[in-house]
Length: 112
Length: 111
Image (cartoon, rainbow over all chains, first blue to last red; front, side):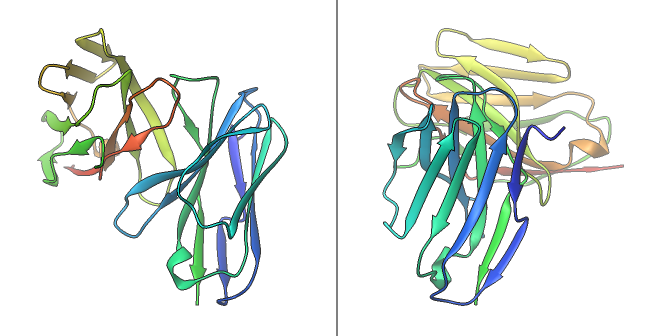
């Protein structure tokens, strides 16, 4: 009965590879997000979707492409992985704007 | 510039003591939120305080907001070992959930 789940929890891959991270929420929320947390714990928003529509797209390389097949799922695909992509990626969801966000457990991505 | 910057000091206290941490921000806000992150886990929402509120309580947590000074504080009373975590403030300037997080404040509660 995890509210926001992500898979995989750990991802180790070589530079240049393409990988995906999946996120699902069973809270009935309308809005979902992707965040990146670097090694210094700084957390920065990457994308936000509301009812499958992209509403926030921060300055993120276009190697990162979010996809929302339905409002309960928001996946993150990363092409041509680089060393600097190593971080923990968190998915989150909220009921609507101006509300608390519920975070998933995170996916630790290591690019070698 | 980064919104929501906590005082950078790490805090180490004895169980039962109170812990206070501060957050300052640079622009106007719709609301400010506090989150906790235990080591290796996701963030957990603690409290949301709106710009027209000055104080809010939730269990052992007390949050204050001073919009004139663009600052907020989080007080944890009667701390427990389980309160050991990083605490983040996040501002939402426009109420559209584009949260800007601070750098986090590490709190260690010694049993």
